[in-house]
Length: 206
Ligand SMILES: *[C@@H]1O[C@H](CO)[C@@H](O)[C@H](O)[C@H]1NC(C)=O
Ligand SMILES: *[C@@H]1O[C@H](CO)[C@@H](O)[C@H](O)[C@H]1NC(C)=O
Ligand SMILES: *[C@@H]1O[C@H](CO)[C@@H](O)[C@H](O)[C@H]1NC(C)=O
Ligand SMILES: *[C@@H]1O[C@H](CO)[C@@H](O)[C@H](O)[C@H]1NC(C)=O
Image (tube, rainbow, N blue to C red; front, top):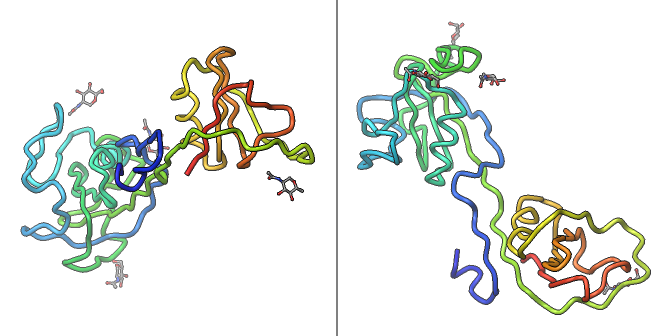
């Protein structure tokens, strides 16, 4: 991450664990060699113990598994036998299974499916795009712009402004005013006519 953004002043990485999208892929076979091996060699993560290479819980849900695997930045997770969660960089080595055989409700939420007997319900995780912010001179004002270009958020530091910008797909730049405790999240790469450099520091999203 640092290398990708090395010329930029401020870098906001993907906050580990922040997931933008979870999507179901399908039902896949497992075997004793294990199809999804991302947790191999890991004994525990915080207070959660790993029974290699999976986490087992009497309260297993899709949400728990997606959140857990997102901590490691894994692109896939699988749920098996109502209670096991696998994280992985790949899946499908043992082949697909009949969709109707992934039919076990999750132990922790009976309205979700958590795989089947030696079968994984496999899901994909998509993460937010990483952003870098570069502090720069405010571009010259474009007085002809009539598009809505900002909305405001209470903030104390520039970082308080960069985080919501990072979280928004639309935000392209930020003006941070520590004095006024305000962020202006900008939808375009130049500020609207009503803002000027006296309104704060300008950060362009890269
Ligand atoms: C499941 O979660 C509930 C509430 O969080 C907790 O009281 C219970 O002990 C958990 N059960 C298991 C088997 O982990
Ligand atoms: C999947 O299971 C259903 C219901 O048991 C069965 O009708 C169908 O033929 C199976 N499909 C395959 C590809 O095995
Ligand atoms: C259980 O799963 C359903 C379906 O995914 C979801 O809408 C619901 O919020 C979950 N319940 C809890 C308590 O998380
Ligand atoms: C200002 O607006 C004009 C006309 O819409 C456009 O051609 C120009 O590129 C804009 N200037 C900047 C700095 O974006």
